[in-house]
Length: 490
Figure 1 (cartoon, helix red, strand yellow):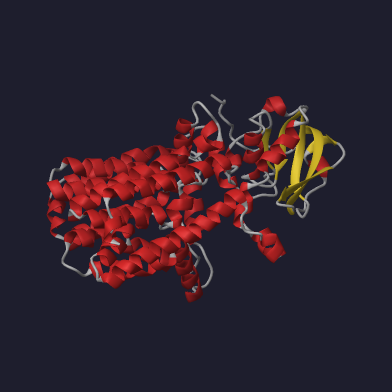
Figure 2 (tube, rainbow, N blue to C red; figure 1 turned 120 degrees about the vertical axis):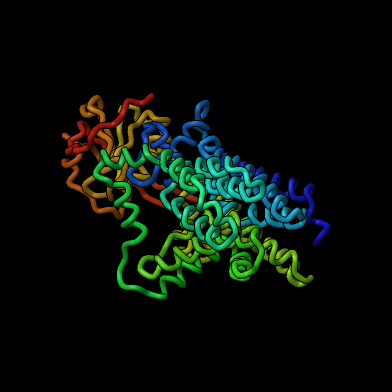
């Protein structure tokens, strides 16, 4: 086992997985979540209903010269490589141990969270990246005792806040470490407080946007994350199952043991790693008593978590090192099969069970290009209305922005579309209402001044029917519009 834990093998390992993810990034159609965030990048702002704006900035930057799927996702692919370099450097400066460095980078890259999460462009990607950068900069402060690293940490913290609201948990996790170590001496200086304020300055544009929109994004996320019904331990078990999926079953089991063990050891580096992992995972376990936290919500924890599990097992006996290899191999096998199925449909689910095939989460990568191409065959159509804030951007993307995607705001949840306005120039044009056959919609005169004949489109995957769309063409946008206005497209 030890002979594989070298810098050279690690570079090969990361390179192979990066190429694999890159090929899938170019092949797979945009996931509905990605299409929604891509649309944000076409209308840049300092805030959005669902999240802070950094994901839109990242997508806009990487799609300056091409709107292809690969470039929409490029930030995630590049971010995983950069975080791997940060992770290697961090472990070397903590422990000066090439085996632990190699093992940590391999665990990190083999996490289902990394394998699939960095392939789908969401706010988690910039948030994860800046969280990792803040982790790295703070350890440089511990290592060098140079105050300037407080401010580098503050900047990274602020940029993480601009990516996802839950990045605010970096502050209490770090404060816990400072209070439990001799680094508490810094609390007698101005630097930690100035660093925190510096981070908050980067977040001010989001605060301002919310102040101009009835604080709606803050309210939505608080309700989305913390609201719930009666407390249930079953929710916590469901949450733990989700964590075992995103980290891998054996990595999560050994990592949790390592996080608890190192939390009580007199080892500053190990304590730092535990403080930046364990409280985050436990916090969302506690909130899950009322409402199950999403599997990706504590994603930031798994940067340092990868080091914890690797240090714990690689420094152990032969059986422990074997357990590390087994944990990584299981992750690669399970995630590899899922991703290969996403890209090449290698699992004949429709033969095994029709319900499994219909519930297959990888179906979300299929059918959007076909829908866009079908609508493009009717050049008279200038806009499309759907029941989903995610499906409408898919139409906009796969018609190459020739068709303006919009939502039926009276029949779908509140989204960023509620803060945009339907363009006046398109009100008299022909459009189409697109819905799934099981959706309850109508009467169609609600949407158009006049309507045409219904058209059906069936989307297939390996001879299995995924969806059947109903398309109602019409002329003249008739829905009531209550939005504040949409900016001109650059």
